Length: 182
Image (cartoon, rainbow, N blue to C red; front, side, top):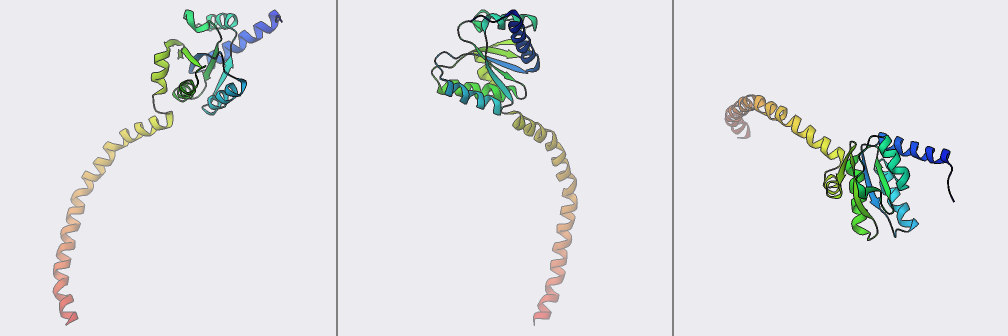
């Protein structure tokens, strides 16, 4: 059943909106996946703050051209579904790549990162990155480490003086404690 021009334009506008909102997109071939598997993949993608949609190739080409995206030949051939990363690009790429590893039917064709086309290998490299919260924690640890070391260096002379005073007090207090015990 053919769809009207108005409906096609609505779909194109939706694709453009998703493309403009997303930090990254993973283009896949999904031939052979059951609806249950598609729903499972959609749930995993949703958990990363993204969406997974089956895309009509001709409308996708029009939308990507209007959105200013270069579309490699093989991206929009055969069955095409795209995962859109609205929050964490690495987490989305990991979710799709992990699913593709366990499914013989889902194949990653490539993707986009900040509007630039990337290969399937680059999508896998993106998937191998740690999640955003881990990267933030690592960065924070790197920034805080010099301050922590500086605080330790500045506190060391005071700790040494306190140790000398305590040793002296223990030595002075030892004879008095021995007399009191006797």
